[in-house]
Amino acid sequence: MPHAHAPSVPPLPLAGLRVVDFSRLLPGPWASQMLAEFGAEVIKVEPPGVGDPSRHNHPRYRDQSVYFNVVNGSKRSLELDLATVAGREVARRLFERADVVFESYRPGVAAKLGVDYASARAANERIIYCSISGFGQSGPLAKIAGHDLVIQGMTGLMGRALEQANPPPVPGFQAGDFAGALMAVIGVFAAVAQRAHTGKGCEIDLAMFDALLNLCPIPLTSALARLAGASGEPAQEVFGKNPRYSTYLSKDGKPIAVSLLEAKAWQEFCRAIDRPDLIDENETPADRLTAHGARQGRYREALAAHCASRTAAELERELDRTGIAICPVYTPDEALAHPHVEARGDIAYIEHPVEGRIAHLVNPLARSGLCRREHDPAPTLGQHTAEILAELGYSREEIDALRAKTR
Image 1 (tube, rainbow, N blue to C red):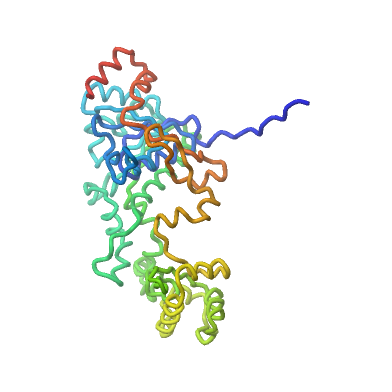
Image 2 (cartoon, rainbow, N blue to C red):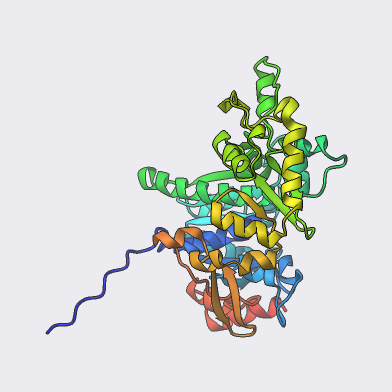
């Protein structure tokens, strides 16, 4: 009998797309890694000697930075000195063959280095050029360095926490960085689709500030209401005042997250703990994201008592049995060890030539067949320099001369 053919695997959405990435640290590298997951070829251009500063971040495996490896997988590294005429000529050749360019310099620096949009477009009018900066290429804040903490502070996101603490705590998540990265990926996909119609590329001025502001419709609801002449009160409460959307302590002192916003969920909880007196039969959907007025104290007291009467493990067993959203707050190690992470395939392991078996986080779209599940290991600094230069048409002698100048 003839052998059955294996089912064909559709090409990844960005297969055949070439990305040249001059960015460093977080937003640009994470965005370009995601494009690599979607099938693009990514060339990471790094300054000689030091490379991307995040190569030196702690913690480390035996030798290399964990952080660098989890945001730079499946790329090739080209060590290049853009301060030299020869380096800029290499960049020009890269532009000629590129579909997408990322850069994350402060406004004006790319032009000084000869890798700005005008230079890229002169080499290739189909190029899609994405500048990722803190506050954009124009405006009164354009010259300010785009660190995540500053972005979160100035978008008003951290300002919502002033009601609980002044100064507010440093956020545990780099919302500005990842907002910028995600919006950059969306922008590239849109630009690729637009280019299919027009035949021309475009310039994407991507500000982390703009991106995070756009992702803050909930924190900004009251302010948006006031812009329209309304009072903005009562505020939409998901920032600690709502006792049914807050954190408490278990019997063994572990933090517990409570999310019982909907009336139905609250009623189920009240009946489960034999406290029907806490049910407000007149509660409406408008009460869902409020502080619950005069009932706030009673609700908070009941929830605190419930959590304090059980260990975190007991509360987790209740969660599993009832589905009522009262959950332990996990440490990072506990989160990665949870069976749900394994069941969903959220972590993959790869064999690194230096570090051995290492883990990385899996793009959730891999489950739909839209992107790669496993990364290739992140490159060492300049690992693919000779290979890429040869592809650009340089001879062996020219490659040796160029590499000698970077040492």
